[in-house]
Amino acid sequence: MAAVAVVVVLVAGFLAWKSRPQVSEVASDAAATASGPAPDSAGAGRAPASGAGPGGEIVVAVGGKVRRPGLVRLVAGARVADALEAAGGAEPGVDVAPLNLARKVVDGELIMVGASAPPGVIPGAATPGAAGGLINLNTATLGQLDSLPGVGPVLAQRILDARDAQGGFRAVTDLRKVDGIGESRYEQLKDLVTV
Image 1 (tube, helix red, strand yellow):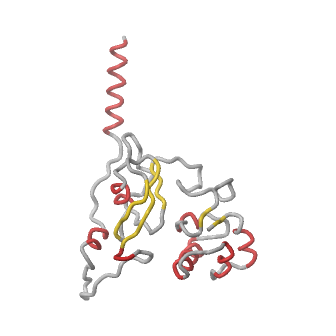
Image 2 (cartoon, helix red, strand yellow; image 1 turned 30 degrees about the vertical axis):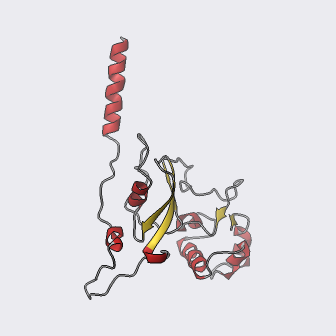
Image 3 (cartoon, helix red, strand yellow; image 1 turned 180 degrees about the horizontal axis):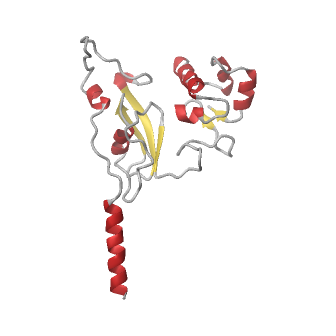
C-alpha cells in the first residue's frame, strides 16, 4: 500500500512539474539596444528608453523566490523575462504565471516573484498607510504610485517625470511641485509616502 502511495505522489509531482508555465526566449528590444541603436525606416537611430541610465542601462530589483535576488542591470527596453533570467530564474516549483513576462521594465522597479499579495495590491508594492508600508517616491514604480488614493496613471507618470527632472525627491513636500497635486491631494498623500 505504501509503495502505491509513493508512486501516486511521484506521478502527481511529475505531472505538476510538466504543466508549470515555461519561460521561452523572446526577441526583445533589449537585444537590439544592447548591440547599438537600431535604424528605423528613415535610417535614424532609436533613442534609449526614458529613465535609462548611462549607456541605456537600467537597474531593477528582483526579489521573492528567485535564485539570486537583488539588483540586476539590464539594457533599456528589457522585459520582465529578462530581469527574471538575470536573477537566475525562479526557484523550482515557483509559479511565474502571475507575472507578465512580456512587460517592459522601468528603471528603479521592484519585481516580486512568487509573492502573494492581497487583492488589489501589486505584488511587492508597499501597502499605503500600513506600518512601515510607505511608498518611497524615489523608488516607486508607476503601478505603485497609481495604487495611491486619488492618483491615476496620468498623475503617477507626472510624479515620475518630476522625480527624473529634479534628480529625485529630497522631501515629501516636493510633491507640491508636481502639476496636478494641490493642497488637498497633498494632504491626502503625505502620510502614505516617504523619500
